Image (cartoon, rainbow, N blue to C red; front, top):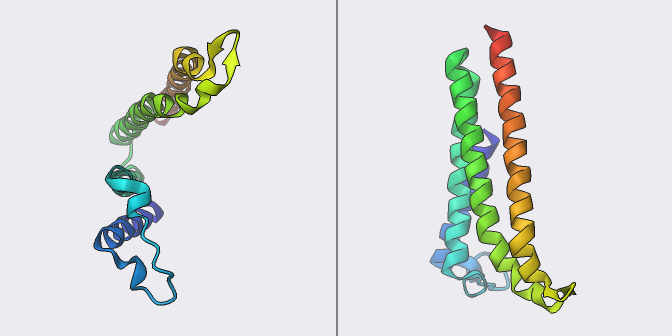
Length: 145
């Protein structure tokens, strides 16, 4: 339930930013975050709100069901989370790599090294964490039967 409420608050905040309500609220200094975030940042915040709402509904569905359906829902939730983590990692590493090129490691810029080696290492860590969590879900499903 908490995720659903938080997601709705984020979406209402995003819609308020798009409507330009920042300077109209009592006690506000008229700060408009739209130029700072841009439309890409606004879309990202909107997506975070929608994902929070979806996570809340998934949590409620898992709590209501039992047995095989519960196992399937937990596995689907873990898979969505893993895919979302991999996508976020794939998008974030190139964005962070540019400013890090000032630092050099063994003659290579840190941003290049991070993009070439760090992303691969974090994807492997993510895969092992996903597999470990899936094994725990499967073991719990086996003990319920």
